[in-house]
Length: 436
Image (cartoon, rainbow, N blue to C red; front, side):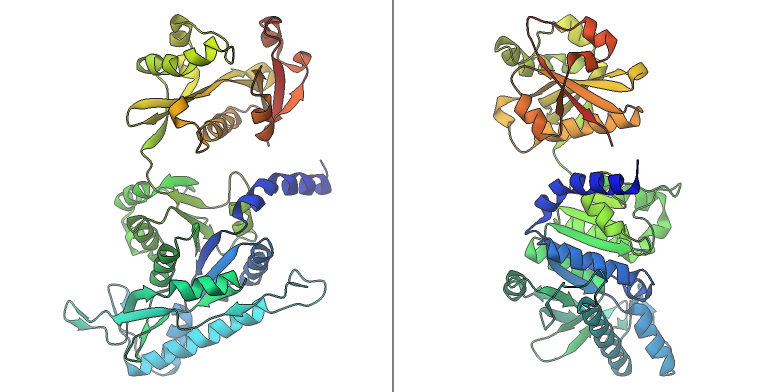
């Protein structure tokens, strides 16, 4: 397959994500290390692309290494407590200098429009301001943090107005008090509280790693916030990672979706947002609806869902005995102990294909993309089994499967073992989906 064909295929597959992200609000946070990295120019290009696709963006930048350099240049020794800088009067000037310089640098990059560059014709409007109200941390463990503060309030209405005007908002790690004081904040604190206040659709945190890594150094592609806590127990060093701690705080204050992506990997942001497998880690809130592999105790719940559909001819009739024998093929969605949706995968390894069957949802719980999520789960499992495609046979739900990317095929295209069992009286239509 040529590079051009690969590009066309990727671009087409990204269309659902483009539609899903349009008009949504994303808060992106990157530390001073990310801004100083050679790949940051590429990140800015990707941010410009998100803006052109209609995503509402708030950028929160850090400045720790840049502040540290200015403190060293001033001949001052930095003081930290609990990994937070103790900011005196002289260091506060270093903080404001570094933050202002970085903000201007980011604004300049977003203002580029050189011909033959990714920014050509972007015409991005950028704004910043005193949107963050802060308060002093005060004295902790006997240590007076002076001008080091924490977020007290985010001016949501002002930020929404800028976003409605299609501006990208840049927030520095600085906050202001009603009495006119300036406070040194952490970028993580600003990002998390901004995302929570605006009820942002995504909080995206750039990190030096691919994302959240397990104890073996392998990337965790998707997990729940509670899983992050379990990784902290296994990896004590993660407790010192400010990005991981920001994820924990995001979960505590109710942010639904948080992403960790690498600032070193070119295109990681786009890959995370516009491909099925992503490039980093997606962390979500715990749901009381859980996907599970069915076992023998779930047969009664399965029958309660599929028997009414069998009576209408939507599904092929299955006896309890057959369900018990094939129970290991079923995935179910359980809500408070009740089976509310189900679907099955029957693999045909010799043909590197698999049948998706018995996709059904309890009538009280239809909607909320439950069937779509089950289908996606089985397609993922089929990929893990090394299958190249999946197919379905259906009499009444052809349009729904077509909406999920399935294309009508001939019965002769099915695996031989399945063709032998084909029921000509039902006259089901066959649909096939290649697994990318």
